[in-house]
Length: 115
Image (cartoon, rainbow, N blue to C red; front, side, top):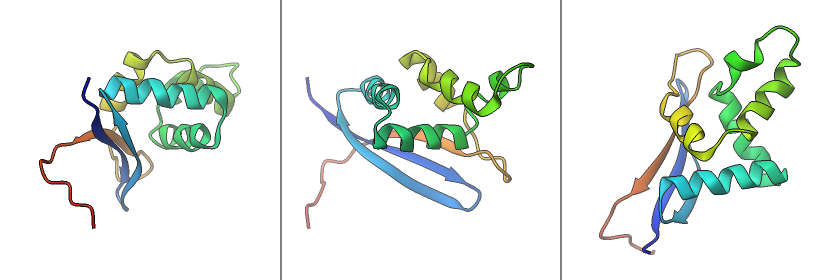
């Protein structure tokens, strides 16, 4: 299967970042890789987890009584299934205060120029 380029982007009201570029068959493959890295606790995985936490994925879950909020929020993200994480990413948004938006965008270009 042909692999495409995907960009992981995160943004807030102060600007946007390109966090990583992946070569993969699909967005789902990118998310599977991200979850593997987060579960292994690699440097990339920790960086990704921080990106997802800035977007408040898992925040509502972690606010339940009796939870260690920060730990519960991290575990919630790590325990997600790939399709659940894709859906959660699609629901992220910028609120002008603290929420960050995350997108995985396929780079569609016939002319990628190597300089």
